[in-house]
Amino acid sequence: MLVRDAMSTVVLTIGPTHTLRQAARLMSARRVGAAVVLDPDAGGIGIITERDVLNSIGLGQDPDAELAHAHTTTDVVFAAPSWTLEEAAHAMAHGGFRHLIVLDHDEPVGIVSVRDIIRCWAPLRQKVPA
Figure: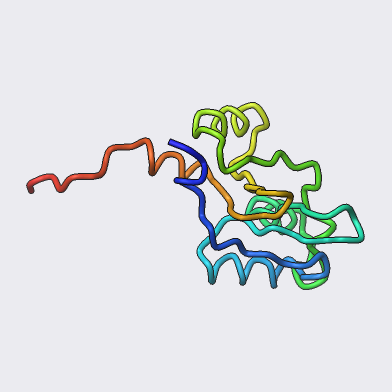
């Protein structure tokens, strides 16, 4: 199975000046764990995850004052839609992260997460009789 078969194609994108609270609200509303941060002034495409927001709040930082660009990972590993899920899982395990931005011709076309991969690999749940 390929990344294109597992990825989420509705990608939440935010700008670098969104506050962490705004980012968290948007991620929560979309029920996603990451947002692509588009920042043409700082090199293009980055990612912010629920873990980045959690770490900031854990440090006592104000989510209404902290901006996404200060918490964005810019050293991103990107996946191609043609990667196998094994390649994506290996990249995640090797890099210690749970989301990959999927690029096609340098444009974000999806995000694949560990959850997406597990959903594809795990057998469908069957109801167990009570």
